[in-house]
Amino acid sequence: MSNEKHTYAAGGREVADGNPNRNPIIVGLDIGTTKIAAIAGRKNENGKLEILGFGRANSNGVKHGMVLNIDQTIKSIQQALEQCYASNPDLRFNEVYVGIVGHHIKSLQTRGDIVRQNADIEIHQEEIEKLIADQYKTYIPAGDQIIDVIPQEFTVDNFQNIAYPVGYSGVKVGANFHIITGDKNAIRNINRSVEKSGLKIKDLVLQPLASAAAVMCDQDMEAGVAIVDIGGGTTDLAVFYEGVLKHTAVIPFGGENITMDIKNGLGVLRTHAELMKTQHGSALADEAKNNLYITIPGLRGLPAKEVSVKTLASIIQARMSEILDFVSYHLKQISIDSKMLNGGIILTGGGSQLKNLIQLTEYATGLNARIGYPNEHLSGTQIDELSKPMYATCIGLILKGYNDYENKHKEFTEEFVQVNPMTVGGELAEANIPSAEIPVPAAEPVKPKNRKRFLDTIKEGIIDIFREPEDVQFDKKS
Image 1 (cartoon, rainbow, N blue to C red):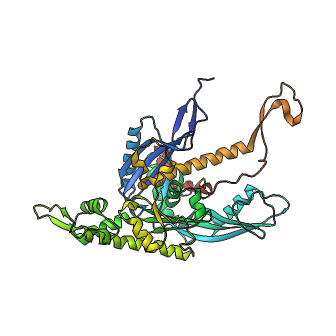
Image 2 (cartoon, rainbow, N blue to C red):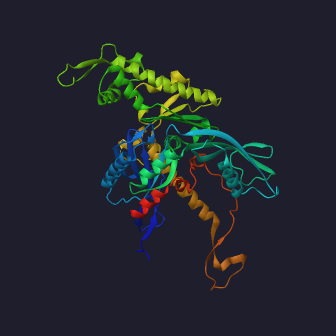
Image 3 (cartoon, rainbow, N blue to C red):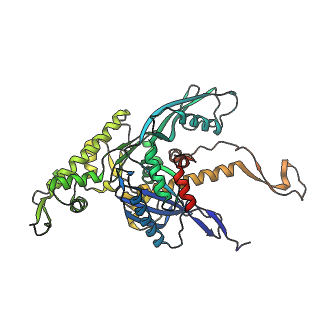
């Protein structure tokens, strides 16, 4: 029996392994406006992620975070997967965790309560799940779909701000909820693109929540922090205060807007504009040198063009200031000021690497700022490329997958307790009584960590809601 191999599904890959207790491999797929990244990882014995496969491709068919051209998106996904397979030929995906974002994402606040039939019995998890399920009946505009219902603070009778009410007793239990919605067609396009690339979506995760999981810790949640994920097509905001998610928002500007501003403002090609932004760009015009110029090659024999670095910085600062004004606006909308967010602002995403962006952020918002790197959750042997902020979402998707896996594993171990056949009922049992796994309730409710609570996003089955008949036919043909 010692040489027996165990095969088990692992978040997108089947693994043949002689050690059944080894952590599974989880695969994250980040479908962004400028890039598509696929990363496979597994937690080691220290709880750190070891990256086992990595692939990246330029994104085509995606605008402002939304899949518009499915065929082009499929090609880009397949290119990223091919690179991931090439980095580790032993990897074989069939399921992935996918991030979702775009202009169509909205959020609203609701309140829900249930009156309990027996106030003398402690509150059970099933009652909390029913309270959450009731919020999926909330009215939303036609064409939208509730993506996730995230509890914020619970109440039990007159007791307020309860993080986890299981184990309490009372007549009425309620909660404030943060509900995230999205456009059905946009979600359907993501589903089609991934499935026609030969994969199955294990779960959809709101990208700012995935990025937050990768760059923040429990101390950040307790202190209060705003995650600003500057992507190619959008800037995503997630605000945490007193250990709970308070607000999410999608700002319709990102790194691509800055590139196009440079292209149009200076009259250069898009490729030149992107290079100027990444190599010479600055978010503060006052920090740029007056006498420094960039030479742009002329087209088809035309003379070369010289561009002032200070002029370039002025264009970048104007757009970044607009994005940060939106951040300040959303913080004011939820009555959050600089005194409440002791953790300040964490900047992440590819656009966060702009020079002097921290200074501009602190000046525009009045909050302390820092760059959020996902290397806190990576083992020390990883390549430097993956510790960049642009991969925070993909790393966060893997963490989301592990959160699901660990929660299911915990539920299983709490539901079934191994009983010694020789001591059943406290008495000596007959020797021929076989061992059994007897379902018993958990002796004491276990309070999950705050970071795990907000990571529990899309419920199982959400993907099937958006699958159309032609998608099913495709599956049968394939």
